[in-house]
Length: 77
Length: 362
Figure 1 (tube, rainbow over the protein chains, first blue to last red):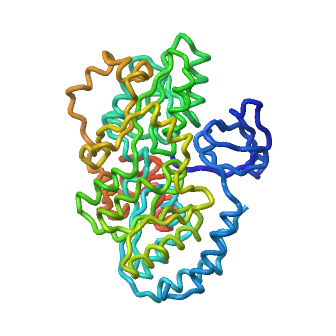
Figure 2: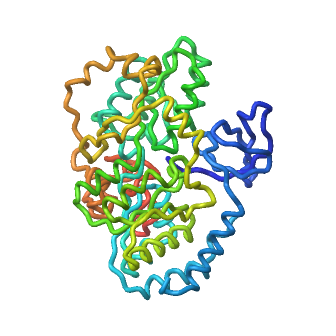
């Protein structure tokens, strides 16, 4: 139920209410984007037809870097 | 977009955890976490490292009570068009499911989200369309958003929204099981942020990590929990920072606050849990199916509604039981012939166990 699928915004209407989301496998669907502040090209998480949050690519990379850092820091950390 | 299935990194984390030689029990509250755990065999792998992870009351369809299901069945029987998410229609009521009613000719629709249900109402002005609004904080903003846009007057909802932090509190207060750490649901957290969990670490001294859904996310969360425990700490960490902001999604929170107020509600397997429900505020009562169709629903008011015979979903949702410990699992209760909701929903731990467990594969 709380499953949310990541996708990329490829089109957005003037009122910024509805957007076309490309899910990367050829699937494109409309989603309601009134709960988020987004632009074309942003990656979002879609749940039950609504974008619930924007995905932050920079943050994702930083998280991975942080994981590696934490692991290499050993058990004292 | 993100490479969070790096096997080398996964192995590295597991090796590190194994070396710590622990004996811990963690809980998560999300069907998607359970799916990742079982699908990738992480549950078995972590058990070998001394860490057991169970799914608590984290499946909206599963925690919906038998009474709420009977309400929906009765509304369908009374001639309403009822719409709900796919899994819900297969949950058995006392004598039948919505799916059975559909085959008998009652108007039962499966929808992807609430907006689809509103479209049905717009296209069928002569019909009363009731949407069964189940789901946690992830789903509640979509319901709120739709009600704020004034849907047609023939549209209403059977409100069954519930919130996660208070059920966690209830579990800890009940004290039936040992919980050394909590893996918090990533998508609920995109909405609520980190703050609503903080009282749990403070009051119960339980570490928490908000976690994403890839295998590396979960392994990393386990590592973070173990580290907190080893360091004698208990606080809320955010592993899923690519999607969860500290403050959550403010717009979505505002929508929820405008439409709902917290209220006491029963969860399957639990007594009434204070403040764990989202109740429609009085200014939205015209969209409240319980208010609008009070006469139709009256016959349920004093009726005692029983759980399915032999079903142990309640204990499972409280973390007291694993699917394979239920005598009905895989024998009398299967996805094709489910007795309880945990076998119906793709987010239910019995359904997940059945789908991925070699022993029970069809």
